[in-house]
Image (cartoon, rainbow, N blue to C red; front, side, top):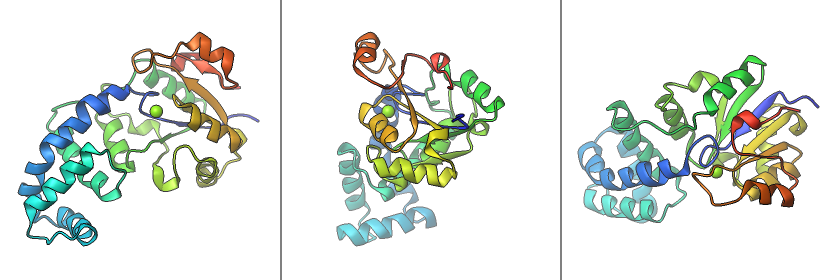
Length: 234
Ligand SMILES: [Mg+2]
């Protein structure tokens, strides 16, 4: 079946996982305190704090209690929707101030453009929130890349290593899984997508992993590439 949609992972695939780990998360950890102190009375922020306060038993006026809890959650890399919302707000301000741009591998933009020109619809799938993904590609090293993508998926579709998640994504795109290519650097994610019937490609980025592409190639059924330029749409 012809591939008419491509779903790609971000960290370790389109982009260096080092950027998130070395830039985004340390920045959020450093700035979340000042952000909460300065903005806790704004409606969008307060709405999130009310939810977190209800869950954690922190009264709304206890700003420092929230700061401490949120810093702890960031250190634990907690998978929490409300934390992700606040982190997204912190990052949005930093991106808009031009403090950093998100990393995208140099081979990626042109290949995505070629696929789009061939009327392939492009999607991302990441554990980052949809909002954070949109920010990521709005403020990339290669400028605003959002026009390349038809949509963004996050873990509201399911866990990244669950087969059902990929069936859910195929359903959301309204396509047979066999018409979709999933690209990732993670074997378990690729296995799950394959089990759901999708085509797969394993991206191995030497900046992100010590895996040897040749050795991986001998051991896996997934096509293995080291750059998007090597990906062939069957
Ligand atoms: Mg990844």
